[in-house]
Amino acid sequence: MKNLYDEIQNFSKFKLAIIENNKTYSYKALHKKIDFYDKLLSLESKNKLIGIDCIININYVAAIYACFKQKKIPIILKDKTQKDAIKKMLNIKTIIFDEKIINSITNNNYKEKKYNKDISTIFFTSGTTSKYLKGVKLSHESISHVCKYMNKRMDVNKSIIEQIYAPIDHAFAFGRMHSVLSIGGTVILPKN
Image (cartoon, rainbow, N blue to C red; front, side, top):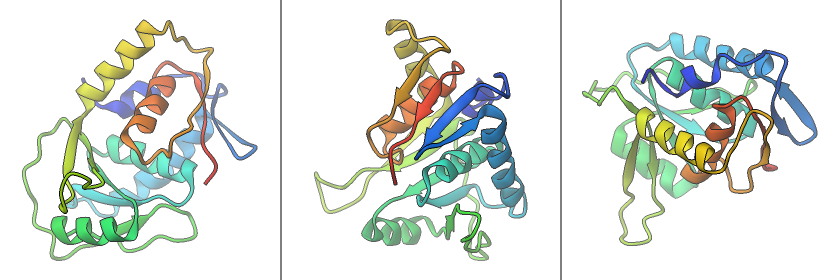
């Protein structure tokens, strides 16, 4: 298994990939956005953990896949309390993936840690069972396996057009989105 980015890169560039707020994005347009963030991430090669603050869904999607392409680990930052706690715990700075608003991705205090090369992302739970946030590491292989299994069980093929109802910064919604994109289908993202 290479990574989740590899699973979405070989579809017809003209096929519709994403619909968001009456805007459509072909796989070519999606990859153009991914390339934008890929270049941005190339400026800071030492950071393995990348903080992503969701503002615009299509930018969030492109940022996540750019991280996968760069073999970096995106950390999804949600509400203000979580953002501050996670940033302090992991010593990362926020990157807001919006063409108009990009915070610094340089973190001079960053200490490189050894992470399993297969980790795709870390989602943080809401902390409902305790007062502490819990980071859940998800691997490229496990996400890919679940997506392939669900697609097979549900007889999903590239003709699928699926509305994602949950916010895409949640693991379930991200998984559904990747399931559809990994077979060349079309995703309709929720409104911001």
